[in-house]
Image (cartoon, rainbow, N blue to C red; front, side, top):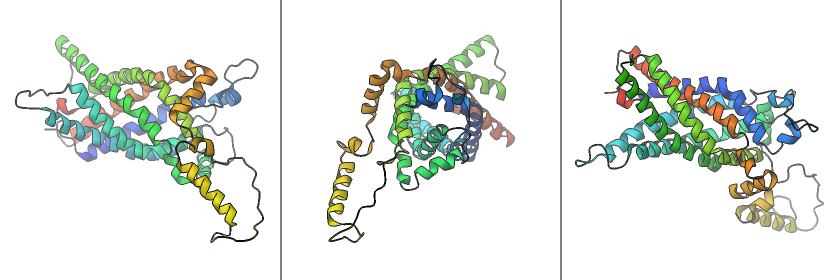
Length: 351
């Protein structure tokens, strides 16, 4: 019987998220800037094409919003994953097949995908704020996060504009990472058992988990890089209003006016604009919002297919470090919290 409670899972997930945010956030900031459409204009030398010092300034911009959101989102992810994995495992068993009808990898992929959907709903606003704050010019007199929040003051719902893109990246990522992670971790433990190297310590468990999670995460990160590039473009455009930068012209009101003080003709135009916004076929033309497919085509047109892989190597590195620390700290935290109460965490019920 597992010695972990829901509180253990929430606390361990929060500690893991906080640790990773502080350590690998600078790499994430650089990756966002490399993937942005303004990379060449703001972060490279015009004459040589090489990165300029601005790329490495203000690398912790926007971290506050992420820390606030990742604590509940990581707790929600791990709580959902642990409980769903247990439920799916039990449902997968039958009297004729006690080991399960479906491969265990399918169970892990299903549980992690469901957990990711819950986590993304909490994380999306912070991710949008974070990525836009990361693009604010370093050294600005106003805090980067506050500058970004000001852009969403008139349309706070735009903070969730990137949910589909975030889930579209994270679902295949976790669906690939967790089965590979679980399999690799099992193989390493079996190898150590055969060689008589197993010590049963928290350090050993955390190290094996960290290496397995980092390796699996690095592979999944490289494969899903094109989706990540598109997601970055969508989230960076979320702060751009439909008439961003357009001159404000005060129209003279003549004749009949509606309840809002606008002329009847102006109101009709407003209705037409709203109808275009609600129509998915014309939304990209009316306010600059485009589908993921359209954005992908534009990236290919601008940079070729290699443009979809921009930042892939950096993402691979920081995912290896981040995923390893994240799950390593999480599992170590679970074991430690249970041990403090004198309880024992079953090996089979660990990640």
